[in-house]
Length: 116
Image (cartoon, rainbow, N blue to C red; front, side, top):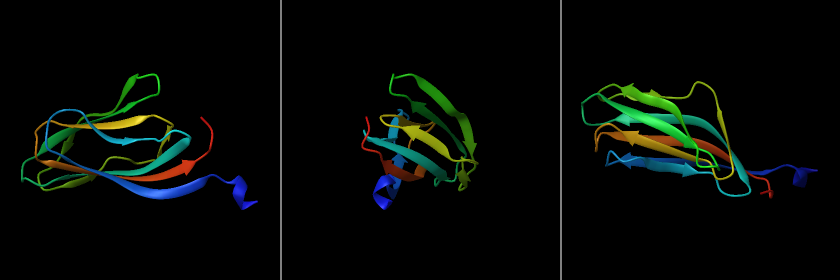
């Protein structure tokens, strides 16, 4: 019976946004789906800033989750109020308005399905 359930693991994806380019935070592996439980953004320079978060689907279409979301100086903000479900090959990208100020940590439950 237990073998019929998807194999799961809990992981964190982390990035220090040292540029203002869109930076890949996480890509769902093939034959997996993922449940994003938390996206924490921390500002560590003493200056308020903004972040943009997008998801790119398997057809390369880009969808905005947060557009220029404000992050307070020396503050930490939880972006999600509900879980976010992603399918194989979907990508979360983050973009800082100013380089060298923001850190992002995302908590993920990743499930192996064995299906493409």
